[in-house]
Image (cartoon, rainbow, N blue to C red; front, top):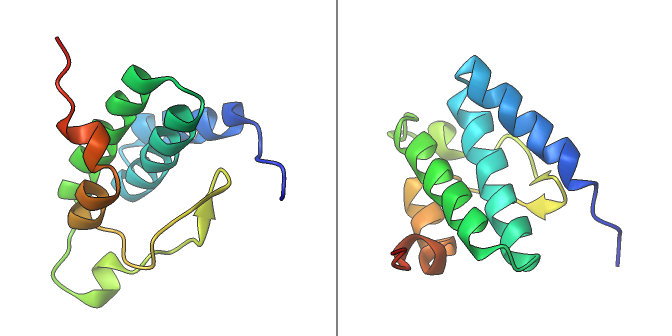
Length: 102
């Protein structure tokens, strides 16, 4: 098993994408952060990143295969789905997106 890159690198990329308004990178990094933080037991943080990933993905064009084809195989040690769009994010992060937060 390979070692995961430091989560700080992923957080830095996420913050840069958020500041620049680059929705594809934001969606991809937030998706990876949702998975990484969920694996680390940080469920509330994972939920925040899952919602951010979905919101960013919903702003992306999705009418053609080229629109939804992943441009990267992995982000921050997390494999990305071949097709990356809001429906895939809803499916893959369903438990994080549907959990009630008081």
